[in-house]
Image 1 (tube, rainbow, N blue to C red):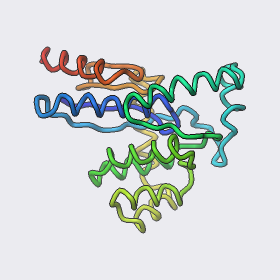
Image 2 (image 1 turned 135 degrees about the vertical axis):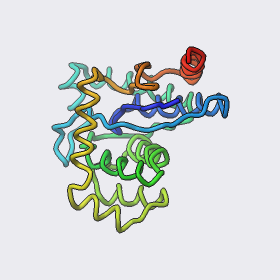
Image 3 (image 1 turned 60 degrees about the vertical axis):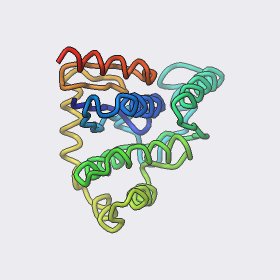
Image 4 (image 1 turned 180 degrees about the vertical axis):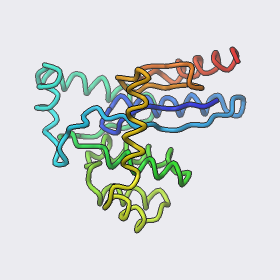
Length: 209
């Protein structure tokens, strides 16, 4: 079963979805062999590298006030706790394009899943900047990837064209919100579901095959 998770590091619901899907796949075990990959999507493709204040950005984008943002964050925090993800304090939103370039390289190195989880933890758990090359290099090294090679990739534009092409492919296929879980390029599970919901959906898809 081929599972492609279209998501963005900046998306808190993506963290919930990724951790819930991991639990679902673990529950299924070897009964359904899975090929898992993470595909690029930018919620804020025009975000400057210096980022923006989180509350100001969300207020302007969605027309909600600080109290509503805090309430939403509490819901997300509780959903994260349910799947083993601990949300920390985040005060800014940053550009994530270079993080997607790192993930593209990580896929070639067989480390994408580990790097994806580490990036989600760095931003949503620790409030660190996923646009910072220093942070990205540290994440890569922590996941067993070559530190110098990571720095070289990030210093240039390697994999930029491939990431942009992948982003356009998913947009053109109708993906406009994340997380979106695409199974065998035929089935779409949209939104952050519970582990049980993901597991039932994957078992139903496998049974249809």
